[in-house]
Each structure stands twice: as structure tokens, then as C-alpha cells.
Length: 76
Image (cartoon, rainbow, N blue to C red; front, side, top):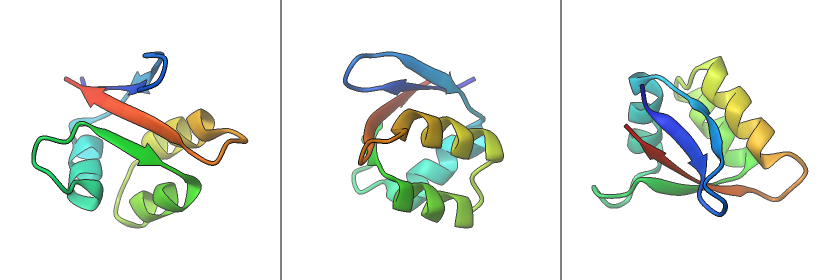
């Protein structure tokens, strides 16, 4: 199962589905080799509107917390 990490400190944010990774890639990817993204609350809303699961949305909102956003990366 794919996992999301905080890119800055490599902390595991949680496990997500393959469908959630597809959503990230389809919505955010500019380069076919991207595995990391800057996520803010507006980005989470866009992902949610495009079919991201409640699990992914919850993980990302928790990672952002009171900050402006967070750099995340994923791996299989």
C-alpha cells in the first residue's frame, strides 16, 4: 500500500490507496517522475473535488495543521 511522508522530516503521514495516488498524480503532476508535492488547504479541496478519499483528505489536513502547507512525498 502506498505511503505518504512529510518530505521535510520523513515522518510517515499515513498509508493511502492506489486510487488516492492516482488522484494525486492526475490532479497535481506536472512531470511524470514527480513523487513529491506542496499541499495546502486549497489543494486538498481540489483533490477532494476530484475523488480523493476521506482518508487522504484527513491525512493531508492533519499534516497541514495550522501551517500554510506541507511538502509531501509518496512511495510504494
